[in-house]
Image (cartoon, rainbow, N blue to C red):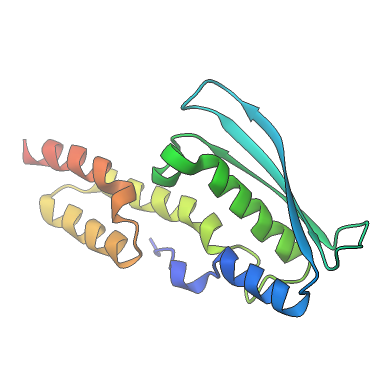
Length: 158
């Protein structure tokens, strides 16, 4: 299974910097579309709009994103903020600020973590778990899989 290489994806903050460099009087606006569910399991939906100038009535780009509280390490404490960042990244892509790839690093973290979680579940030994851990660590995702690794480590040790 090929690992998702997060360094191949641009962070939203770089798109934002390029946007304001090219459009210093531009603006980025976000709107909370929905927040449904009980605390700790809230589903957030955010829409972002990118305007090239303060006076623009129509946006140059828009984008939606959703997150669910507790669906990952960042979502335990900052699901709404993560959602907003993803929406901004998508809106900037619609406005032509997508870099070499349309998808941002923030959006690729979810499938990368899921891929590591699958590898943890399939690991049959502590050495296999260590290899997964080291791969995750190389991408800065080790904290996101730590609980799964600890659970699986206890299972393979018994």
